[in-house]
Length: 225
Image (cartoon, rainbow, N blue to C red; front, top):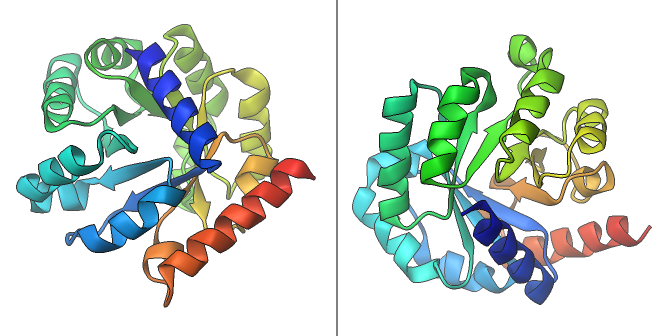
């Protein structure tokens, strides 16, 4: 399953010449806007709020964009193996390609979940209060490598950690913290990420289409510099 996920995201990224995963964390899903942005996106990262608010809209989103985008359920799973796998199966049945889980729950949970649906593990977070998690990013990256997960989440807001994670792994790295959380477009790619997760900076822009084109241009600049 992980091989299929990696192949799909790589092919979409190459075809569209994009490194952007759009984060959707609001309860209302603007399908018209997403259709306009889709040609510039590699994937969508759908958070717990929209998934919980409307399973019907979430399923429709997965149906509408499954052939054009990689769809990632961002539920940051942190439960026992049995429950984690049940949640993973639900998201797979919705039409998601992958799911995000916390790496700190351990190998048993991550293996069980990854056996059900490609799993991306959080090894570090953007917020300052996450120091207990962040202090253990090396061990969590090693666990992710051992299980050959679908990818790792490491934030652009902590460039030193992001660069070290890149040195430690060949797994795909997805990096949040771009735009609304302070880091400029392209900064995560520059420090070793494979994809930048961008949400509010695009979706709350006065001109989202212009903003995403700006982001792609800046990311390309960093890739080529």
